[in-house]
Structure formats: C-alpha cells, structure tokens
Length: 280
Image (tube, rainbow, N blue to C red):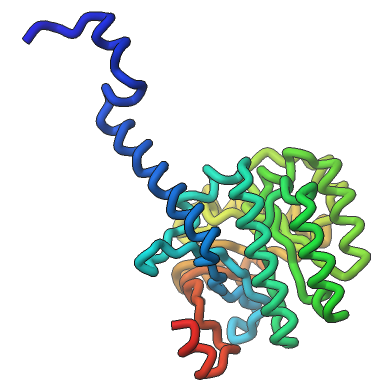
C-alpha cells in the first residue's frame, strides 16, 4: 500500500485517523446521551457522604450530597465521567437544579440533617435554580441554617464579584458556604478575603498519603493556616487511612471526609427500613 496523500488525510473526519481519540470522543458522546436521558426520565439521585469531626470521629458534622446518574440498566455513572463536560452547558444547570431539589427535600423531611450540596457559580443566574432555592428555604425556617452550598475554587473565580454578592445575600438567611477543592486553583488572597466562606475544603490531592509525604504536609499546613486566619472551618478531603487521620488531627484540621469514614451511599443512616427498600 502506498502512503496516504494529503488529500486522503483531508477526507478523513477529524479524530478518525487517531483510534484513541475517536474511541474517547465516542465514549464521551455516549455518556452525554446517558446523562441527557437520565435527566429527562429523572433517573438521578443523591448519595450521601459523612464529614466527621477530627476531634471526635464518631460525630458527624454534616453530610455532602453527591449527584448520581443512572443509565438504563440502573448502573451508576460516576460524576467524574461527565461533570466537567457539562459544567458550561444547560445540562450542568439542570443537574444543579435536581441536586438542589433533592437536597432541600431531604432537609425538610429530616430535621436533624445538615447537608452540603455542590453548585456551579453559573447557576447563580439560572432562574429555575434560584426559584428552587427560595421555595425550598421558605418551606421550613430551619432549612436555610442546615444548608451548605459548596462552590469549587475554579468556579468561584469565574465571577468572583457575583459570587460575593450572592453569598452575602444568602448568608443573612442562614445559609453557609464552603469553598471546595481549595489549593487546586488560583484563588487570590484578595478574593478569599472578600468571599467570607464559612468552610474551607482542602483538595484531596494534598491529603492522600499525607502522613508519608513531607511536601504535602507543608502545603496542607499552609492551606489550613489560611482557613484559620479567615475564621473558616477546615475540612480535609479524600482521607483514606488511619495514619492520615492521626496526622490531620494532630495538625489541627477541624473535619475529615473520605472513604475511611464511609463511601457515598444512597441509603444513609437516617432512612427507615421501609425507605431503604423503596430506594433499592
């Protein structure tokens, strides 16, 4: 066979000349179709992961509600497979709305629950999301004070002035805010000073294996010091072993989150046996 000419290559659709690129693109499109279908048929749920107090790990400070999408067979599609690709799209706003709806329903139904929910800064200007929030916190006067909204560092820095005004408006109503994945992005200290976040969640890349990683020990101590300076509760993400737990507790981190304390579950401990059977 002769070599392909420039014209031959030009006639090949983009990506088809690279089997790996083509396979990845096809997979991405398939996942997007599954997510679209799941949203249309409301095959979406929250999984709950505990955040515990470092000083008393038997005590849960609050839970994080994590969105889970199901395919047509009932299999869970991990959020990491689609969340970054839908962040800027209408699907991203719809996912934020569904997570908020389900989280608010849980807060109304279970008065002892304190819950954090992820949101994008882009949802601040999304009318359906704002209507859902106002309706939810209006149903029960305690819901706002038990709700924590998590905004990632990268998302907050997209429109810092808008995020600041949004937070100030809702903090007056009792809602708390967490800065998620801190250390993974480029938050300027000026903006951090102006944001007034209540909770600082240190990115898991610095936490995994910290007991044996001197560089991460220094970085995490610095990030935790920033949280302390700005009077924020510090949370270490992705805590996975007892050695890391002991190290983080000795460091003075306030709360811990990770598989060591429990994987996200769609059957949280506050559900009754009947509710658990219904969710199966």
